[in-house]
Length: 281
Image (cartoon, rainbow, N blue to C red):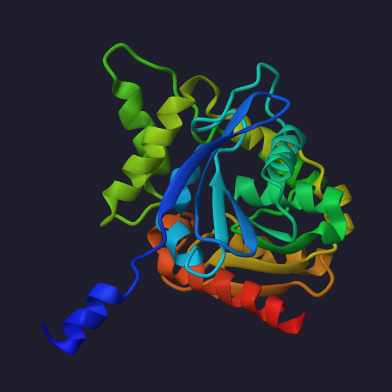
């Protein structure tokens, strides 16, 4: 055996991905984690699950404890009977943080997950080490009025012939790269798990009074967005203006599904931002 072969055998592989459940005031919350060290909690978009971060986890987990949770009501987390609200989602995030005993935690949120991260950061102030807002819309009164009569994003009515599967697929197809149907299939699979309430996450975002809450954020913040995310890219300047000292970055060649479409770029941007903060302490 050559020295090179011995070196390859001794080189450690990627950190293991481990699933778990945490108790909360609502019931059990499902999460998946990878690695050890400073904790970073990853929050997904509607109607996804932790699976959105499946390929990001081992990249971030190489140097820190990366945790991706299923938002309350989604994935394998308990589903409350009351209507979904951003504040309710944030309650569950706080419960997970407390149950796992996380200190110095950073939050990363994509689309809906980013709105939830803002609410948690507004509540916890400097206890949130850093904040990464990915593809997050700025939700204020003008936006609420603008989307009040907009057609649903994901709502479909289940049909006996299964045609609603194609309808859900087509509703999202324009946001996904045509050469990656596997990514869209993952979204549809997550959406089907909450098909009866699939639109509630979007309604919760559009009802949230971000303009009142974002001013309370005290964490170091990175506003991240894919260059093809026409839904959220125009809001990057307003988000940055609302959080003193916030930085911004644009991911090339990707859009709404930037997390799972380009996990390499996404994880590298997040890791660089978190490392920069650690070096400055």
